[in-house]
Amino acid sequence: MKTSRKVILAIIVLVVALTAILAACGGEKDIAVIARTSGSGTRDAFESIVKSEDGTSLKDAGLMKGAIEQDKTSTVISLVASTKTGIGYVSLGSVDESVKVLDVEGVKATAENVLNGSYKMQRPFVIMTNKAISEADGLTAATKDFIAFLKSSQAQEIVGEEGYVRQDEGATEYSAPTAALTGTINISGSTSVDPLMDKLIGEYKEIGGAAVANVEISKNCQGTSHGISAVKADEVGNVIGLGSSAVKAADEAQISHFEIALDAIAVIVNPENELENIGIAQLFGIYTGSITKFSALSAA
Image 1: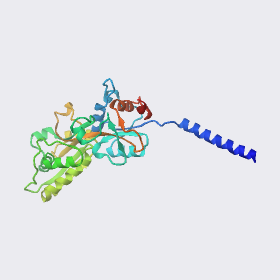
Image 2: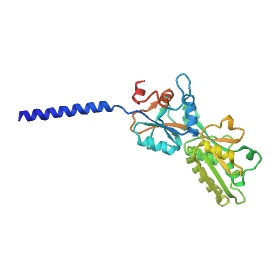
Image 3: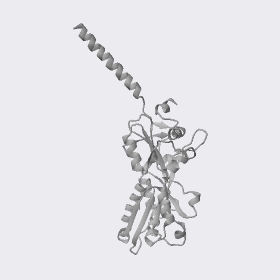
Image 4: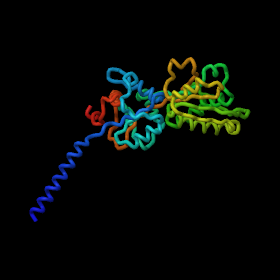
Protein backbone atom coordinates (compact mmCIF):
# COMPACT_ATOMS: atom_id res chain seq x y z
CA MET A 1 0.00 0.00 0.00
CA LYS A 2 2.88 2.36 0.89
CA THR A 3 4.54 1.61 -2.43
CA SER A 4 1.29 2.36 -4.24
CA ARG A 5 0.98 5.72 -2.49
CA LYS A 6 4.56 6.59 -3.33
CA VAL A 7 3.94 5.81 -6.99
CA ILE A 8 0.80 7.97 -7.05
CA LEU A 9 2.64 10.83 -5.33
CA ALA A 10 5.51 10.54 -7.80
CA ILE A 11 3.09 10.67 -10.72
CA ILE A 12 1.41 13.79 -9.31
CA VAL A 13 4.77 15.50 -8.84
CA LEU A 14 5.77 14.54 -12.39
CA VAL A 15 2.52 15.90 -13.86
CA VAL A 16 2.91 19.20 -12.01
CA ALA A 17 6.52 19.49 -13.15
CA LEU A 18 5.63 18.73 -16.77
CA THR A 19 2.81 21.29 -16.68
CA ALA A 20 5.20 23.95 -15.41
CA ILE A 21 7.77 23.08 -18.06
CA LEU A 22 5.21 23.17 -20.86
CA ALA A 23 3.87 26.52 -19.64
CA ALA A 24 7.38 27.93 -19.57
CA CYS A 25 8.09 26.61 -23.07
CA GLY A 26 4.86 28.08 -24.39
CA GLY A 27 5.64 31.48 -22.94
CA GLU A 28 3.92 34.72 -23.87
CA LYS A 29 2.66 34.92 -27.43
CA ASP A 30 3.83 37.67 -29.77
CA ILE A 31 1.61 40.67 -30.42
CA ALA A 32 -0.60 40.16 -33.48
CA VAL A 33 -0.03 43.45 -35.32
CA ILE A 34 -3.11 44.38 -37.35
CA ALA A 35 -2.99 47.26 -39.82
CA ARG A 36 -4.97 48.67 -42.74
CA THR A 37 -3.87 48.05 -46.30
CA SER A 38 -1.94 50.57 -48.37
CA GLY A 39 -4.28 53.21 -49.78
CA SER A 40 -6.32 53.49 -46.58
CA GLY A 41 -6.72 57.04 -45.32
CA THR A 42 -6.78 55.73 -41.76
CA ARG A 43 -3.44 54.01 -42.29
CA ASP A 44 -1.98 57.12 -43.90
CA ALA A 45 -3.03 59.27 -40.93
CA PHE A 46 -1.93 56.68 -38.34
CA GLU A 47 1.51 56.21 -39.90
CA SER A 48 2.02 59.98 -40.13
CA ILE A 49 1.14 60.53 -36.46
CA VAL A 50 2.95 57.54 -34.92
CA LYS A 51 6.62 58.41 -34.39
CA SER A 52 9.66 57.13 -32.53
CA GLU A 53 11.33 59.01 -29.68
CA ASP A 54 13.67 60.65 -32.21
CA GLY A 55 10.78 61.83 -34.41
CA THR A 56 10.95 59.24 -37.19
CA SER A 57 7.44 58.56 -38.50
CA LEU A 58 6.08 55.07 -39.01
CA LYS A 59 5.42 56.08 -42.62
CA ASP A 60 9.14 56.67 -43.14
CA ALA A 61 10.28 53.66 -41.09
CA GLY A 62 7.89 51.23 -42.73
CA LEU A 63 5.42 48.70 -41.38
CA MET A 64 6.93 45.50 -39.98
CA LYS A 65 6.96 42.34 -42.06
CA GLY A 66 4.31 39.94 -40.86
CA ALA A 67 1.73 42.60 -39.99
CA ILE A 68 -1.81 41.44 -40.76
CA GLU A 69 -3.21 43.96 -43.25
CA GLN A 70 -6.97 44.41 -43.60
CA ASP A 71 -8.87 46.38 -46.24
CA LYS A 72 -11.87 47.33 -44.09
CA THR A 73 -12.51 48.90 -40.70
CA SER A 74 -14.97 46.12 -39.83
CA THR A 75 -12.44 43.35 -40.42
CA VAL A 76 -9.83 45.06 -38.22
CA ILE A 77 -12.40 45.16 -35.41
CA SER A 78 -13.51 41.55 -35.85
CA LEU A 79 -9.91 40.30 -35.99
CA VAL A 80 -8.87 42.17 -32.83
CA ALA A 81 -12.04 40.94 -31.10
CA SER A 82 -11.14 37.32 -31.88
CA THR A 83 -7.37 37.56 -31.21
CA LYS A 84 -6.26 37.82 -27.57
CA THR A 85 -2.87 39.28 -28.51
CA GLY A 86 -4.22 41.53 -31.27
CA ILE A 87 -3.79 45.29 -31.61
CA GLY A 88 -5.22 47.52 -34.32
CA TYR A 89 -6.46 51.01 -35.13
CA VAL A 90 -9.83 52.19 -36.43
CA SER A 91 -12.18 55.15 -36.51
CA LEU A 92 -13.52 55.86 -33.01
CA GLY A 93 -17.01 56.16 -34.48
CA SER A 94 -16.82 52.55 -35.67
CA VAL A 95 -15.81 50.99 -32.34
CA ASP A 96 -18.20 48.55 -30.68
CA GLU A 97 -18.22 46.56 -27.43
CA SER A 98 -16.29 43.65 -28.95
CA VAL A 99 -12.97 45.49 -28.49
CA LYS A 100 -11.27 47.71 -25.89
CA VAL A 101 -10.05 51.22 -26.70
CA LEU A 102 -6.70 52.20 -25.17
CA ASP A 103 -5.83 55.63 -23.86
CA VAL A 104 -2.93 57.15 -25.81
CA GLU A 105 -0.31 59.04 -23.79
CA GLY A 106 -2.78 58.96 -20.89
CA VAL A 107 -5.57 60.65 -22.86
CA LYS A 108 -8.91 59.02 -23.69
CA ALA A 109 -10.13 58.90 -27.28
CA THR A 110 -13.19 61.16 -27.13
CA ALA A 111 -14.71 63.85 -29.33
CA GLU A 112 -14.04 66.38 -26.55
CA ASN A 113 -10.34 65.50 -26.42
CA VAL A 114 -10.06 65.67 -30.21
CA LEU A 115 -11.61 69.14 -30.12
CA ASN A 116 -9.34 70.45 -27.35
CA GLY A 117 -6.29 68.91 -29.02
CA SER A 118 -5.19 66.72 -26.11
CA TYR A 119 -5.83 63.50 -28.05
CA LYS A 120 -3.19 63.50 -30.78
CA MET A 121 -4.42 60.54 -32.85
CA GLN A 122 -6.91 62.46 -34.96
CA ARG A 123 -7.67 63.23 -38.62
CA PRO A 124 -10.37 64.85 -40.77
CA PHE A 125 -13.20 63.20 -42.68
CA VAL A 126 -13.18 64.77 -46.14
CA ILE A 127 -15.81 65.10 -48.89
CA MET A 128 -14.29 65.28 -52.38
CA THR A 129 -15.45 66.07 -55.92
CA ASN A 130 -13.72 66.55 -59.26
CA LYS A 131 -12.28 70.07 -59.18
CA ALA A 132 -12.62 70.84 -62.90
CA ILE A 133 -16.26 69.74 -62.96
CA SER A 134 -17.11 71.49 -59.69
CA GLU A 135 -15.51 74.79 -60.70
CA ALA A 136 -17.28 74.67 -64.07
CA ASP A 137 -20.60 74.17 -62.25
CA GLY A 138 -20.84 70.77 -63.91
CA LEU A 139 -22.08 68.65 -61.03
CA THR A 140 -25.46 67.04 -61.69
CA ALA A 141 -28.44 68.66 -59.99
CA ALA A 142 -28.84 65.71 -57.61
CA THR A 143 -25.14 65.68 -56.69
CA LYS A 144 -25.13 69.43 -56.15
CA ASP A 145 -28.18 69.16 -53.88
CA PHE A 146 -26.65 66.36 -51.81
CA ILE A 147 -23.41 68.34 -51.43
CA ALA A 148 -25.52 71.27 -50.19
CA PHE A 149 -27.00 68.96 -47.57
CA LEU A 150 -23.55 67.68 -46.54
CA LYS A 151 -22.52 71.29 -45.89
CA SER A 152 -25.63 71.96 -43.82
CA SER A 153 -26.31 72.45 -40.13
CA GLN A 154 -28.55 69.37 -40.22
CA ALA A 155 -25.62 67.27 -41.43
CA GLN A 156 -23.51 68.62 -38.58
CA GLU A 157 -26.20 67.54 -36.12
CA ILE A 158 -25.73 63.98 -37.37
CA VAL A 159 -21.94 64.32 -37.14
CA GLY A 160 -22.25 65.28 -33.47
CA GLU A 161 -24.83 62.61 -32.67
CA GLU A 162 -22.56 59.91 -34.09
CA GLY A 163 -19.70 60.91 -31.80
CA TYR A 164 -17.52 62.86 -34.24
CA VAL A 165 -16.29 66.44 -33.88
CA ARG A 166 -18.54 68.88 -35.69
CA GLN A 167 -17.29 71.34 -38.30
CA ASP A 168 -19.96 74.01 -37.99
CA GLU A 169 -18.12 76.90 -39.63
CA GLY A 170 -19.98 77.91 -42.79
CA ALA A 171 -22.80 75.40 -42.25
CA THR A 172 -26.21 76.63 -43.41
CA GLU A 173 -29.71 75.19 -43.14
CA TYR A 174 -30.68 72.78 -45.91
CA SER A 175 -34.11 72.97 -47.53
CA ALA A 176 -35.62 70.37 -49.83
CA PRO A 177 -35.55 71.37 -53.52
CA THR A 178 -38.75 72.85 -54.92
CA ALA A 179 -38.65 70.60 -57.99
CA ALA A 180 -38.23 66.83 -57.85
CA LEU A 181 -34.74 65.54 -58.64
CA THR A 182 -33.67 62.33 -60.35
CA GLY A 183 -30.39 60.64 -61.16
CA THR A 184 -27.68 58.57 -59.51
CA ILE A 185 -24.97 59.76 -57.13
CA ASN A 186 -21.95 57.47 -56.88
CA ILE A 187 -20.09 57.56 -53.56
CA SER A 188 -16.68 55.93 -53.23
CA GLY A 189 -13.91 55.98 -50.65
CA SER A 190 -13.12 55.50 -46.99
CA THR A 191 -14.57 52.59 -45.04
CA SER A 192 -14.16 54.72 -41.90
CA VAL A 193 -16.46 57.44 -43.24
CA ASP A 194 -18.92 54.88 -44.62
CA PRO A 195 -21.01 54.39 -41.42
CA LEU A 196 -21.39 58.15 -40.96
CA MET A 197 -22.37 58.52 -44.62
CA ASP A 198 -25.15 55.95 -44.15
CA LYS A 199 -26.64 58.14 -41.41
CA LEU A 200 -26.27 61.27 -43.53
CA ILE A 201 -27.98 59.67 -46.52
CA GLY A 202 -30.87 58.63 -44.28
CA GLU A 203 -31.28 62.19 -42.97
CA TYR A 204 -31.04 63.63 -46.49
CA LYS A 205 -33.81 61.33 -47.71
CA GLU A 206 -36.00 62.21 -44.73
CA ILE A 207 -35.62 65.98 -45.08
CA GLY A 208 -35.80 65.94 -48.88
CA GLY A 209 -38.89 63.75 -48.92
CA ALA A 210 -40.66 63.36 -52.26
CA ALA A 211 -38.31 65.85 -53.93
CA VAL A 212 -35.35 63.45 -53.59
CA ALA A 213 -37.21 60.13 -53.53
CA ASN A 214 -36.03 59.29 -57.05
CA VAL A 215 -32.39 60.16 -56.39
CA GLU A 216 -30.42 56.91 -56.22
CA ILE A 217 -27.32 56.98 -54.03
CA SER A 218 -24.89 54.15 -54.72
CA LYS A 219 -21.95 53.45 -52.38
CA ASN A 220 -18.74 51.51 -53.05
CA CYS A 221 -16.37 52.11 -50.15
CA GLN A 222 -13.01 50.35 -50.47
CA GLY A 223 -10.65 52.96 -49.03
CA THR A 224 -9.65 56.59 -49.44
CA SER A 225 -7.41 55.93 -52.43
CA HIS A 226 -10.35 54.40 -54.32
CA GLY A 227 -12.39 57.52 -53.61
CA ILE A 228 -9.61 59.78 -54.89
CA SER A 229 -9.27 57.72 -58.08
CA ALA A 230 -13.03 57.72 -58.68
CA VAL A 231 -13.26 61.49 -58.24
CA LYS A 232 -10.37 62.12 -60.62
CA ALA A 233 -11.95 59.84 -63.23
CA ASP A 234 -15.41 61.43 -62.97
CA GLU A 235 -16.63 62.79 -66.31
CA VAL A 236 -20.33 63.06 -65.48
CA GLY A 237 -20.32 65.14 -62.31
CA ASN A 238 -22.04 62.58 -60.09
CA VAL A 239 -19.12 61.16 -58.08
CA ILE A 240 -18.45 62.02 -54.43
CA GLY A 241 -15.30 60.74 -52.76
CA LEU A 242 -14.87 60.06 -49.05
CA GLY A 243 -11.47 60.54 -47.43
CA SER A 244 -10.30 59.74 -43.92
CA SER A 245 -7.09 61.76 -44.04
CA ALA A 246 -6.13 65.22 -45.26
CA VAL A 247 -5.97 65.67 -49.04
CA LYS A 248 -2.37 65.62 -50.20
CA ALA A 249 -0.84 68.60 -51.97
CA ALA A 250 -0.27 66.45 -55.06
CA ASP A 251 -4.05 65.90 -55.39
CA GLU A 252 -5.15 69.50 -54.75
CA ALA A 253 -5.07 70.43 -58.46
CA GLN A 254 -7.70 67.81 -59.31
CA ILE A 255 -9.87 67.65 -56.21
CA SER A 256 -12.29 70.07 -54.56
CA HIS A 257 -12.86 69.15 -50.93
CA PHE A 258 -14.15 70.18 -47.53
CA GLU A 259 -13.98 68.66 -44.06
CA ILE A 260 -17.26 67.36 -42.69
CA ALA A 261 -15.91 66.07 -39.35
CA LEU A 262 -12.86 65.39 -37.22
CA ASP A 263 -12.38 61.85 -35.94
CA ALA A 264 -10.19 60.11 -33.39
CA ILE A 265 -8.15 57.13 -34.50
CA ALA A 266 -8.82 54.60 -31.75
CA VAL A 267 -6.13 52.08 -30.78
CA ILE A 268 -7.94 48.83 -29.98
CA VAL A 269 -7.05 45.56 -28.27
CA ASN A 270 -8.91 42.44 -27.24
CA PRO A 271 -11.19 42.97 -24.19
CA GLU A 272 -9.16 40.39 -22.22
CA ASN A 273 -5.99 42.45 -22.60
CA GLU A 274 -5.11 44.13 -19.28
CA LEU A 275 -3.37 47.06 -20.98
CA GLU A 276 -5.16 50.40 -20.49
CA ASN A 277 -2.75 52.99 -21.92
CA ILE A 278 -0.11 53.11 -24.63
CA GLY A 279 2.45 55.67 -25.78
CA ILE A 280 2.94 56.84 -29.35
CA ALA A 281 6.58 55.72 -29.30
CA GLN A 282 5.42 52.31 -28.06
CA LEU A 283 3.03 52.08 -31.00
CA PHE A 284 5.99 52.86 -33.25
CA GLY A 285 7.88 49.98 -31.66
CA ILE A 286 4.99 47.56 -32.11
CA TYR A 287 4.30 48.48 -35.72
CA THR A 288 7.97 48.40 -36.73
CA GLY A 289 8.51 45.09 -34.95
CA SER A 290 10.97 46.14 -32.24
CA ILE A 291 8.36 45.47 -29.53
CA THR A 292 6.87 41.99 -29.82
CA LYS A 293 5.32 41.34 -26.39
CA PHE A 294 2.73 43.29 -24.41
CA SER A 295 4.76 42.57 -21.26
CA ALA A 296 7.51 44.79 -22.68
CA LEU A 297 5.11 47.74 -22.46
CA SER A 298 4.35 47.28 -18.77
CA ALA A 299 8.07 46.90 -18.10
CA ALA A 300 8.92 50.13 -19.95
